[in-house]
Each structure stands twice: as structure tokens, then as C-alpha cells.
Length: 369
Image (cartoon, rainbow, N blue to C red; front, side):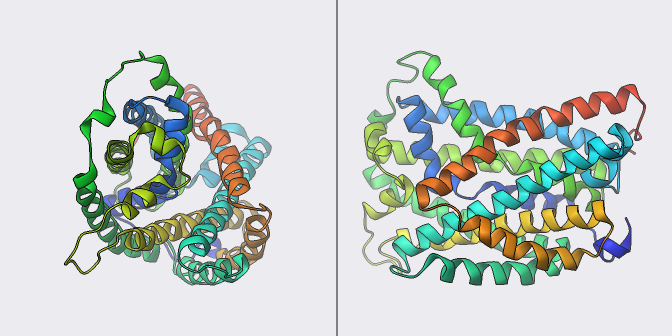
């Protein structure tokens, strides 16, 4: 990898690659997935849709890393020209870069909306967005190794407090809210797959991360672990939210997970109300998604144009700010993220499979060592 546009060669471990996928996935879905799935399924079987979607994403992740492992030490932006030719590869790279840029912008806008609603009431959106972007800029300039090390700190904190908060909500949990299982058949479960898939975007970061792994042949293990943990967390979250609030109650709330945290108190603990604590760890996850997508987009531009990486980190920040300010409210911000999310199903589900088959037929790349 050329040092002129990526900086010194960095390495990340298999566990760090898995942690990057997990942190990327555990974004806005923690707060919104119960509602979006409940609206589509309209039965207590929403948790089954999540498991089915998780299995589909595991298959897509396996295909994606199988492609990346054929071109060890190279990112998507570097190996696709070997498969398709220069101009088609340039167009595909632009699509991937645009995807990362819009995801980063929409996530930071949703963060600002929720933070302004629950923590910083009355604060202008731009005044919340800019500080997070500047901090993200500082981290991204440190490179993928710095990003991975920070994520290793964030993830355990997130998992411990999220699971603790959900377990404490068991005092209002009613198993009857989850019955009957498959009472309306399999069709409601199938309807829930489409919106659920959007919450599992994140494995695509392996298009970049695999090139930096010390042991690229273990990329499959990293992506399977990275997807499996969010599947378990999301399933557990939806089960606890529906069990505590019922399927009808979940449908009527914009932020059902937060509303669940606000529906009970635990006397005598350091935190008697847990919604603020949940927001803190959720903000860390959104920050993770923003920084890793900023890094991927900047690296993509630097590699396809053969320019310095730092230049594009600074250049993309004002562009992402303008994109983040386009939605008029949180509803439009969600629509922006959903639109790009639907495109990702094709971009990272279908195209990698086609490229893998073409590379095998044309004998491009090498069998993983």
C-alpha cells in the first residue's frame, strides 16, 4: 500500500477488526430497531425477523471477505480495478465512497436530533454537530490503529451498561407480550426482514479493514464475530422492549428503547433513571460509526486519486456537515439513512458476489494464504 496516500502501514488484529464491525453496527438501531421492526411485523414475532436478517447478513459478510481475502493487503479501492478495469472500478468506488459519506452525515444528524431532544434542549443542531465532527476529525487523523484501539475501550462499556439496563427492565417484563409465537404465520416475519436488514449495515467496513489485518486469512472469523454480537444484542433488546411495552406500545413510540428505560426506576443505585446512561453509550456508538465511515471515505478518495489521506479528511468534513444539515427534522434524517441503507443491500450484497465470481473465472487475485 502506497505510503503517499495512506500513511505508514498499520496493522490491526482479528479481534480489533471484529470490534470495528460491532461498533459500526451498534448505531441508531439500538434506539429505533424495535419500532421499525414492530411497524413492519405487527406481531410479537419481530425478534424472529432479526435472527433471519442476521443469518442473511452473515452470508453476505462471508461473501464480501472471501472477495477481499483474494487481494491481501489491498482495499476495495485498490483491487476492484484488477477485476473490472479502471473505469467501472472508478464508478463502483465512487458509489462506495458516497455511501460512507452519507452514512456518516445521517448518523451525526440523528445524534444531534436525539441529543438536542433529551440532553441539550434548545441547542441549535449545528452547535451539536460541529463539536462531534471536530473530535471525529482528530481521531480519524490518527489512522485505523487509533480508531480500533478506541473502539476496544468503547465496546465493553457499551455492552455492560446496555445489558445491565435491559436486565433491570425485567421488573416490568411480561412474557405474555411475546405470545403467541408465529400466531399469524410466517408472512409477518418475512415482512420484517427488509427494515431489519438496514440495522445490520456495518460489515462493509471489511472492504477496508481486511487490508490492514495482521492475519487476513482470519477475516472470516472477524466478520462472523462482528455480525453475531449485534444480532444477539438487537434480538435481546427487541425481546425486552416488546416484553415490557407490548407490540402496540412499541409501534406508537419514536424511541421505544429510551421509553422503556424511562418507565422504571431502581432506588438506591448510582443511577436511578437509566435513559441518560443509555444515551451516553449510544452517543459513543454513533461517534464510532461516524469516525470509521469518515476514515473509509477519506481513504477511498486518497487511493483512487493518489493523494494524501490527511487532505481528504479535512476536505470531507465540510461536505458531510452540509449533507447533515439537509434534512429538516429527524424524520427526514431517518429517510436519508434508510434510502442509503436500501442501496447498501445491492451495493454490498449483490456486487461483491458478482465480483467474486468474475475474479474466480478470470483468475484474478490469489487463493488466501
